[in-house]
Length: 467
Ligand code: MLC
Ligand code: AMP
Image (cartoon, rainbow, N blue to C red; front, side, top):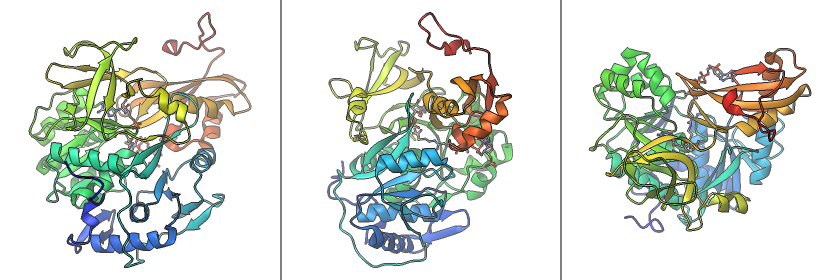
């Protein structure tokens, strides 16, 4: 195993790597490694000494230069979803305590803004920051309340990427293609930092459209299940991906029909892998191993998993018994920013992280994710959305007295957000428009249904299973 305290996190950017030729391409814009290194150093020159900074995380070269600039200077990057509503953005900025904003800024941002110029160059050389320091703070939803900041160290990122490169035989010979957002683990950690650690050129398609995936002619592709389902709906695009070495699916369950259809159209079964913002990627099938539909494979070489029942007793790994999935290993986060009690609650007494997912493990160590413990964490298009956060946004509407949000099964998105409200709101459209001012697009209910009353049990608790 590598000594992460010695080696640079972004190996491909280290001084002795070759630097010419387009390495990172986002849409039509591209940069060589040398250009990226010099542009990131120019960002580092502007921000060195800051503790942490916000990055306007659009799908662009600017975001990549900004994040690499932060990592160069040893400044923690806080990626902000570009479509965050004002309230959501204010929470992220206040909670993270950033004083600087990198990139184009909304008018009301209230921070010192450092624009990103991808053509700027600096030759300043920075020492490798401490491997235990925080690289990123990624905001993610819990069942209730506002999103929490997940603190990810450089060492955790390095450990995850090294184990994945071994599992997928991911090398500098690969060309990585994806079009995922750059403010979550999947698109940013795997999809950008992975390419810069492994040294495989990156083609980011801005959005993960099937035709753009087909045109990119890469060897390694990343997508959430919604992307693969849409690829299957365009068979010519799917067939064009038949020349790729690996298609990797993660962030949500890959439906069996999509697995089968993608296998049929491309001639090879996709790789499935499982992870969380808090743990990074912990389970995957291997490039040279079994790919079983509905199963997400085995732990990364440095990760351990176990199943526990409600009372904390071991659940057998027999391929049938359901248990709460717990994980431990070097890929885990450092904690939720400023929330020591919530961090402590998310670990068992003996230090294993409670994923909140229910799983089955077979005798060979293969894992199947069966569902989540809580109905209040919804996965829609691969985005994790807390029902509580959406309910709070709905309750801020002056006419809404009660609100309950659920994830309804959806062929395209996995789950679709539906809101039930009680109050004087006329039809649901006005409520949808209202929350559009608070929540980013993917957190908005696709449908708002107005009810006379919410179904409640004798204790007064809403019975979401009846909605
Ligand atoms: C969407 N739209 C809405 C809406 N929801 N409009 C009004 N109200 C709503 N509630 C708009 C969109 O903006 C878009 O408009 C159009 O409707 C189509 O939306 P869509 O069907 O959702 O498609 P799209 O926007 O293309 O999004 C699908 C997707 C996206 C798959 C591209 O969901 C996505 O990028 N998902 C990736 C999420 C992710 O990276 N998760 C990783 C988390 S990390 P217009 O005008 O823009 O077309 C993690 C760890 C791990 O989980 O294991 O990886
Ligand atoms: P996030 O916090 O956005 O990183 O979401 C993490 C959650 O996504 C996990 O707790 C799982 O519920 C879900 N998830 C990620 N990958 C998979 C997968 N391959 N299969 C099923 N669920 C997944």
